[in-house]
Length: 482
Image (cartoon, rainbow, N blue to C red; front, side, top):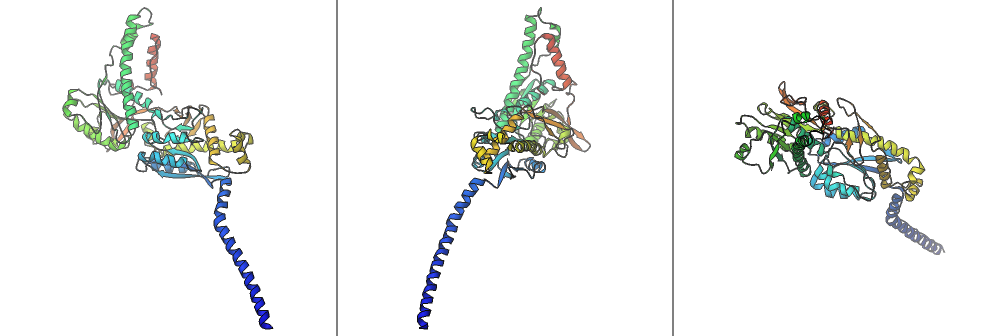
């Protein structure tokens, strides 16, 4: 009897255990298979855990890591829609720009991009950012090539801000300086190895401005002679143009294909314009010093933007008539905050824009303007980086020529920034610096006078005098865009 009861109990227990084990295995299987899918569905609704700002640049390039520290110091602990804004630093050379930009575009948490710290790199990347749907807002910290104005023609505005003036202004200021020094025979040297988009544009436009200056002054003389009875003061025009600017670019070479010394000396070069990156600036300055060592008069050397961190290492014997050009003054260059300035400027601008984005996102009407689906996601807190990108682009567009961004990144003087519709910054200009000895060191100083004592092109007094002269003739000409 007892055995029968035990057998029945054991059978019942086995059935219970079998059912339990089957249910357990089924439940465990469901958790393993279904849970990730459910989590993915939940994540799709709720969106990313953070929005990403990608800071892209070549860490080996001077100033990139300083700018990274600059943006981190001015933009931290930001949130939009209660989602954290996270900054990601990406080390990428110009050769990597195409692939890196494609990767960033395909990420669902991409909010915007700061970079790539090179006109050549950005020329490969901007198409991917601007033609994304919706476009990925971009701030270019140091890129100066005007042709980087990339946009989809079907859209009225592309969200792009540039923090430095463009190279058409640099080329014009360089040509102004060549004229003021009395240069007649000019040699242009291009360093096309590192950043060819930048160097080729600056060199070509410098040559164009030199040619324009000569043609313009020749025209003024002809104008006065042909229409003397109509001009207000032809004597003034003739006096102003009596020393015709007969400058010619007689030689244009690349750094990797230098001409022979005999050819250069036969051309009587009196002005050299070097366009390149800092890696080769000191090299070319030293070589030119040796090149013209036995000539009666050394030519003036003007190095384009990008050489400021190397030229002050020249030997004292070679600094005579050595200059460079930059979009900040020499005094600002020696401020402690200079190296990280591009990043800090970007951070301060974004902080202001983020405040306005948060304010606009608090209004359902503002959100609904971005689209019905965007408004639905906003109501149910289904977060999407593309929705915030639309809001960022909208606030950037609203700020065009209306909003003044207050900037004080440790410069000697406070200054404000505004932007044009094409993204170019307003109010910044280029400065010519002279290299001179200061104690035991070499130092750049802001150029006040040209070597012959003339007023420097681009200075307020100089431009005012030129405008006054031309007003008397009834004809206007190009004055440096400051």
